[in-house]
Length: 117
Image (cartoon, rainbow, N blue to C red):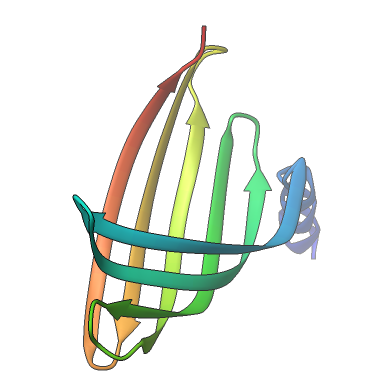
């Protein structure tokens, strides 16, 4: 029983400083020169946490996308990511995104840095 109480206390002490649910919506329109090529509209629900200088998050949602001259297709999307504040001026971020459209899984991995003056 003591080990259970100790484990519960450690979870309480390691709880995030800030956590929250959110909703995002975005639209993308792509082209080359003056030619329209494709568009994508999606809505996601997400949840993020704050642990000291680390901010992990998860998002899931639905959308519709179309290429020039084709009918729009629906898709589902899942994204996992995190930010890391290395110093007051330097931040790092990384994310993995998977999009499911009919029988095709598309994926994207992105890593970035931000330096503030």
